[in-house]
Amino acid sequence: MTTCLITGAASGLGWALAQACHARGMHLLLTDINASLLEQRRTELANGAVVHILAGDLCDPRFQAELVSVCHQRFTGLDWLINNAGITHRSPTLRTQPEVFSKVMAVDYHAPLNLTLNALPLLQRSRGQVICIGSMAGWMPVLGRAGYCAAKAALSQAFEVLRLELERQHISLLMVYPSFLDTPIERNALGGDGRPASHARSTVGQVRGADWMAAAIVRAAEQGRRRLFPDRSSLLASLLWRLAPNLYLRLMSRRFAGELD
Image (tube, rainbow, N blue to C red; front, side, top):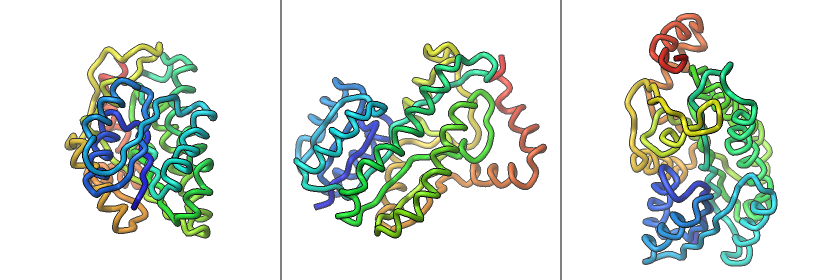
């Protein structure tokens, strides 16, 4: 039986992934910082495969060790590690407090990398799989999201390097690069002062739903794919950034001009 650990599993894409994996009969360990909502999700998944929850702060090394310990003691192993938990901000760089940048980097980069390293012995034993939710923002600049772009770029680069070492240990890696999704990560975005952002987000292309994205991720994982670029318009935008960066910046600045107000 496949055992799957999903971070940020109480809402948005994480919850959609939990439902998709549960429908396939996987044993689940779900974690989120929102304890009450996480308990509600366990109730909703009461029938079928085993579902265990553990609420806590992924940035805490002790909590990460506890997650790995639960996988070992309760499930005797781990097959899929889905690094989904994330946070973003919407604020001009010059009006963003350093603490906001640090928080975004801690949640979006340090936490998934450290959790993966902690889980390596279990993943080695099962010849398992790591699934990381990156972002097209890690490939190209987006106004008002300097910290988020930096964190997702760090995540992408670190795991693409780590991929070569993982594969030598028979652990596969799927990097997912979605664009704009209709999930709480944007609704809960931080402003430059660390409080919730007060202005609506700017978007480009089609805004996809979490269920659609989760289904595509699980299919890609089952197919053993290395990377998933689910949105064609974002992939084209990333190519434009590489081939004609000045044109990309002009177009992006027009589309996201509201982020500077």
